[in-house]
Structure formats: structure tokens, C-alpha cells
Length: 302
Image 1 (tube, rainbow, N blue to C red):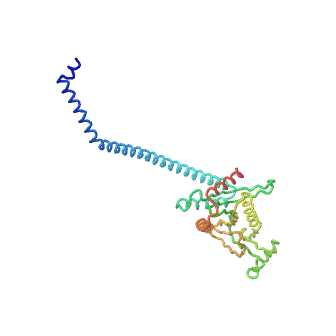
Image 2 (tube, rainbow, N blue to C red):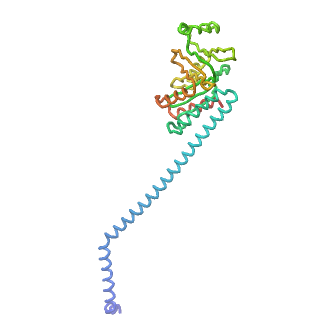
Image 3 (cartoon, rainbow, N blue to C red):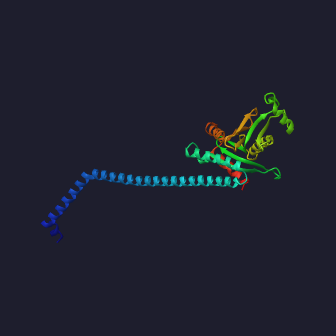
């Protein structure tokens, strides 16, 4: 019976047809195998490109998010720092108007430099009313203003005054200024050392003469002490700043040969000094250094 099946014409025809189909499929497959491979490679490339684009888009979004977050944090830091400085200055206003006005001038200068993109917020700290305690707290020193910049640290003693200043005079100037010798005698001060005299109008008939040298010497000592306490690599620059209170009705004559302290008069001279040294000085500190110094000062002045 099996022999009949295999010899059956219908069976033979079906078998032949199946064989033809199989052969045709194999021929088609081998002929189009290259196209299939090409299509597979194109598909893989397209898939890889889509994956790469997705990852790149995500990375760009993450980067953009991180930049926005960093910008927000920096702006917050800038605004809070500025606000704290201004509040500190405002509190001091009721104590010393002159120091407040000097502090305000320094803060406004920094604001302009930051707004003009000449410096970053973190490139300059303006600190006021800083105290340097001694070991036994009996010789605590008060610093009116500290300006921390990458090109140096500046200690400012600020005096709000009206009148006329003779700075750095001694006996070598008596021939040129004969009247000054009488004030040396009256105040019983050393004629061989440089002295600073301030002449202020007391009332309609009197003139007050003030001797300012102790403050100058104390400012120098405070600058040295600040350097030692915080183990600074570079010297702190002491500055005496005379802030005129009567709209420019003042004069100053500087006879000093002492390079260890700067003497500035008026807001314009103060601003020009910092414009010069902030931009043209050699970098001494990094932003990180300034942060650490400021934080150490804050720790001493909670």
C-alpha cells in the first residue's frame, strides 16, 4: 500500500511542487541575503543613532539644568552676601556715620565692578567692623574696613572729617612751614618723627588741632597682626582714609616719605586706588583662599 502512495501521480506532483518551492526559496534567500544583511546593518545604525541622540539630549538637558542651578546658587550667594554687608553697614550707621559712608562707597564700587563684569562677586569681599582679639582679650583691635581681593588684602582706617591735613611733617619741614613747629611744641610731640596734624574749625573763633599719629601706628600694627593671626603669605596693606564731610571743603598736604602706609582722601581717590590695584596688581590669592580667609574672620566675629 505504501508503494502505491509513492507511485501515485498526485503524490509525485505535490512532492515535485514542494521541492520546486523549497529550491525557489533557497535561491531567493541566497540571492537576497546581502540585502537582508544591509537592511539589518542600516537598522542597527539607525537604532544606535537614536540611542546616541537620546543620551546626548539627556546629557544636554542635565548640563543645562546644572548650569541653571549653579547660576541660581551663585545669584543667591551674591544677593545674601550683599544684603548681609549692607545690613551690617546700616547697623553701624547709628554708631559712626563716617564708617558707614566709607562702607557704602566700597560696596557701591564692588557692585559696579560686578555689574560691568570686570570682577566676579567672589573676587572681592567688603567687611566692616572686624575685631581681632588678643590672647587675654584685653588688647582687642577694631578694624574699620577690610577689603579682600585676589590682588591683595587692604585694611582701612576711616575718619570722617572736615578741615585741613598736614600728613607726614617733621622738623625737616619747619623751614617751609614755620608755624607748624609751634604746634609740635604745644602738643609735645617728637619733632624727628613724621606726624599728622588735622586742623578743624571748632567754632567761629577757634580752630581745633588733632594729632593723628597714634591711629596711624595702630593701623600698621593691626595690619601686621591680621597677617600673623591668619598666617597670610603676603603683607596686609594699611590705608588711612580721610572721608571729607563738607562736600570738598578740605585740603591735604602729604610730606611723608613712609611707603608702609597709604593715605587717601575722598571717595574719588579711594575708588581710583582700588580700580588700579584690583585690575593691575599681581594675583596673590585664589577665590578659594579669599573664601577661607573670610570664613576665618567670620568665626572670630560671630
